[in-house]
Length: 439
Image (cartoon, rainbow, N blue to C red; front, top):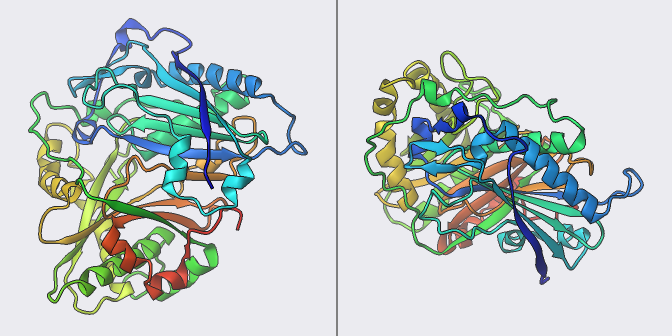
């Protein structure tokens, strides 16, 4: 189905109150500095339910979204500024980009088809400034797309230079709370202590974290709750009696990726998994849950086993998490932080550039971030999913399904690898290949 999306408005939204002078320079943390400058993106779809909710005209919804966004930027004031020299944010209140679009179909037309990233691209805001000039790039872009039926899609893009998945979720939910009520104070305000504990470096080595220029394919798989329970049972062992949902699904995907790699070669290569970790509650002392910024880092595990067994991979993941907490908990702070993460930087550079003699996959989990709670006054979302801004070769992104018990996985591989991966019988035994959202 071809979708026509017509842009009808583009404007800049600024904070509802000027940022005080003493807050005008916001230091990045070391982890902010090290991450690349692309956008984290999410698309949230809302159905029109006239029986359950009062009818709102598009103009009323638009006014509510813009007013509440302005109020939210007052509390998330760094997001209305611009990055300066990869050291700080100039909090000059220049604002964020807000776009509106009209869609020439009903939302049900989208939900009843098998969604592809090419389709989701229509609902994400496009950057107009050159991506190589951080001082000009907005840190947030949003797009409200209105369907003929009264449904709505809200696309949110937040710069990875200043925010991780947790911060993006916190910002989105704070905006929704401000739109739903007269006051947005019901959501815990952001806490800005990251740079004081993990300070920036003014002389930072050049990091080669550019993405590989290769044709890739992204596919969506959905694991429902009963299948995940069965997968957890299969993956359990003496070392990990009760695998988590994410551990079980991640291990299965890793196993399938190893199978693909080995089917193409006559020799055995090590296989490495790199897992993103929300470090807020893993450090000593912990950061609060509402800490703002990139408080995420990575651990990696490797296997050279001839026989690929699910329970062995689950054990590797559990050991990786435990080792991360031991190695980083008290060391990732102050001037010592850079020396702690330096060994990881070379690995990350080769990972993003698809270099080296190790097969690898990268997994990031957004599970448990409450994006399905983002109610802008239109009810809870019908579907929340990711845009393709952060997808690269050998990457896997996991999100909750609407019921909070299943997992939606977006998997990006080379065309050759995907042709083999999507035929894996173990995968298809536990996951549905790109079902419609209304299934």
